[in-house]
Length: 61
Image (tube, rainbow, N blue to C red; front, side, top):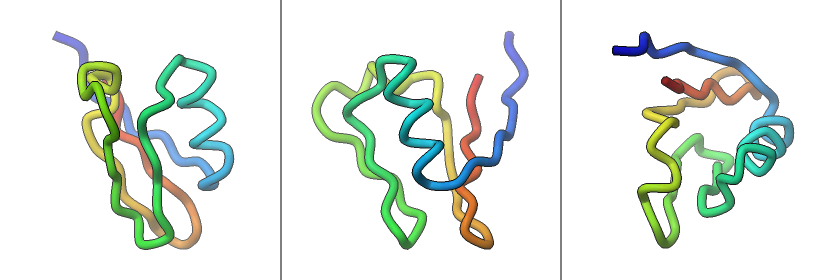
């Protein structure tokens, strides 16, 4: 079992990294909420996220 890792990015960089990994159906809003569009299986490696001080913390495994 992989241990989840918390990675902090700016919102723009977080979205760039998700797109680089082929995750195109996720959007991070200014409130820090995460909305999944379409096939949820495509985001199975991102298990959570939150926004703090202008950074998006993505919890991935």
